[in-house]
Image 1 (tube, helix red, strand yellow):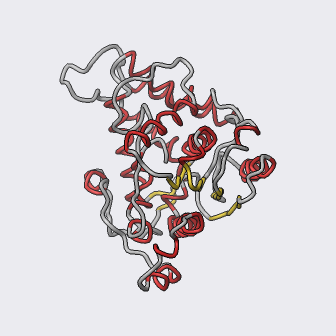
Image 2: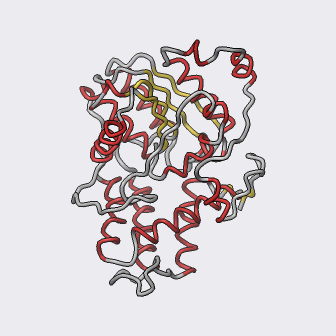
Length: 319
C-alpha cells in the first residue's frame, strides 16, 4: 500500500510472494490512475483509510495482510485501528513520524511550488492530452523527489517509476485550477493534517506488526520507527518487531532482496494456514530464499519509460 501502486513493482514481481498469495494494490486519491477530485478541505490519512475500507468491502475480501510503504504506513495503521477485523498483519516499511517534520514539509511545499510553475493551470489543454510542462522545472522537481525517495541511487526501474509518476500526475493534477487544488491536497495538505495515532486507537489493533527502517533514509531517522514501536507496545500490541535494512526511503524498490523476505516471513507468521502455503516441498524453496523475477501488470508500461526487466536489482548509478 502506497500512494501509487507502481511503487510496489518489486514486490509484485517476486515469485516468493506471487506464488503463495494474491497480491492486490490500489492508488490513493490524486495519484496513479485515479479519477475524480479530492473534495475535502482537510484530506487526511483517515480519509485514505476509509477509501481502502470501501475498496476491501467492494471486493468482499477476507482479512488481509497489508504491506505499507511510507505514507501507506499511516493509512494501514488507521485502517487496522478502525477495522481490526479486516487486517491480519501490518508490515510497515519506512513509516513516517507522527507529524510531518518541518524541514520535510518545507521540501514538499518546494516541490509543489515547482509543480505550480511547471504548467499552465488555467484551463484544459486544447489538444485534449496532458498539458506540456516546462522541462527544466520538471527536471528540478524530479531530482528533488528522487533525492527523498532513492538518495539519487538510479537504475532503469527508479528512472521509469519517476517518469511514470510524472506522466500520470500531469494527466490528473495539472492543467486546471481543480487539478492544482488536488495536487496540493495529495502532496502537501495530506501530510500537514496528519496527527499522532491515539493510544486508544492503537489498542484496537489485533494483528502482529513489523516495522522496517531503511538505514539511508535521508528524511526520517530511525528514532521515529523506534518511537512508533514503543507506542504500539504501550497500547498493548505485543507482537511487534523493528528491523533495519540498507536502503533509502523507498528501500522496497532499491533493496527488495532484504525487504521481501521480511515481508514473506511476517505474512507466514501471521497466516493461519502457513503450513498449507509451504506444502509440497515448498519449504526448501522458502528456506533457500530463491526467487524468480516475474512479469507484472506494470511491466509493459514501465518498459515504455525505459525499464529493463533483465537488469540486476543491485545495478545502480550514484549521482
